[in-house]
Image (tube, rainbow, N blue to C red; front, side, top):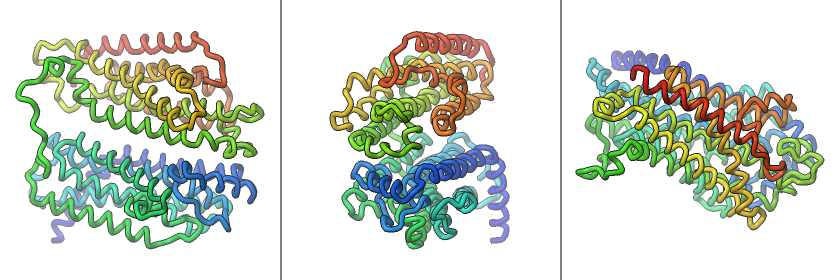
Amino acid sequence: MSTSFARMGTYLGFLIRRERIVSVIWIVSVVGLVMLFTSLYPSLTPDEATRLQLATTMSSPAMVAMMGNVYGMEQLSQASIMAQECLIWYLVAVVIMNIFLINRHTRVDEELGRLELFRALPVGRLTGSLAIIVLAFLVNLIIALLSAAGLILLDIGGVTTSGALAFGLAIGAGGFVFAGLTMLCAQVFSTSRSVSGAGFVLLGLFYIMRALGDVSDNALSLISPLGLALKVEAFYSDAVLPLVILLIEGLVLAAAALAICAVRDHGAGVVPARRGRAHATRFLRSPLGLAWRLSRGTSLAWGIGLFVLGASYGSVCADVDSFIEGNELMQQVVGAAGTGLILDNYVALIFAIMSMVTSVPVVLSVLRIHNEEKRGRLEQIFAKSVPRLSLYRGFLLVALIESLAFQVLLALGLSAASGGELAMGAVIGAALCYLPAIWAIAGLAILLVGYLPKLTALVWAVFAYTFVAMYFGRIMDVPEWVQRITPFGNIPQLPIQDFTLLPLVLLTLIAIVLAVPGAWRFTQRDIG
């Protein structure tokens, strides 16, 4: 027994070494966002009247569906308002982290043959899986404790040690439940794409269940791990029972996953991979068909998600004036200070931020061919008479179509849920203005794939800088050039600014200048 634990500890150390960059970035990002947004609330809610106004607005059905039920109206504080507005979003971020973390070290490693090499050694069948779930527990615990420590250190109005711990542990416990869920999905499904897809479908399902349960005040909210995590009521009741239930759920799910892992065949899943056609269609035999086949599941999920996000933001359009009016900081965030055009500024902000979100799946589609290269699958394709440029062109065309479709879906969701506040044609026009900026980010990714394939992660550093400059620049009052050097800082923000064609043409040219040499270099360099 002691030997088994020693081997698990050795493998856990190996996993920690592999995660020393990715998980550290996740931890720093989540904890940093907790501290950054929390530090804004003394200015956002300086007095009791402002807090009451904000809480009243949050009590509308649309806002409850987005963020959860309002609690503690009789003793509102800056900390409790922050928890009610932000906890759900930190939960979602940590859930996404756990889906990627577990999938990366279970089904992905199994597909690439890494686990087979490990199991060839004299180790137990469950040694690797136990180490992975322990790693997930430790990462979630670190995020929970550091978030709590950050809140205590900031010490805004209403912060207590018990409240900070309840807030942080709610994030960690909710994330650990999804670690167990993803571990279970890794046993059920036989491909990494199916595992990640199932994880995100469950995230969306539980979010919708929480929203319906909170709006209707029924048990659906308690069934959802997201809804149960919100029941801690941080900085008010600081309930412990939801945390205990979440921890038990995570352990039960992990135990079920380990039980299945102990009996299933290596490389297989409980649900076998669906058998495809005996003969591929003519379209699937083309480079574009292959690119679409590899991207379609992810594209569908992102399309649905962006439409739902657009609808979520559109649903508050009718209440946005009362939500922002009289709050100077919120007016500064949306750029409406002194203008009186609160709704127009709100729409412009939504498109500026959500268009950056749209660029994420587009960049992922551009980088997908490099992922295929790293896994050694491109060599099998290029061993046949398949031109490199033709194959890459298929991936680029999918990314181009995605950028257009996702922006339209975002606009449709925003307009459809606005209750007639936003005209369909106007919001679609505002959404399409951001296409050149999305293409410029994608062009950078293409350039990196061609010339610096080992440094493709640099595109995410550029994305992070762009997001911080565009969103937090409004709050921090940074110089205008800080936003202008980003692609999204040069787009005319309809409907509050006049449409100008020149920056869109220039950004499109920049995208072409970046993409063409990158694609050409991909056809010339060594694969792998």
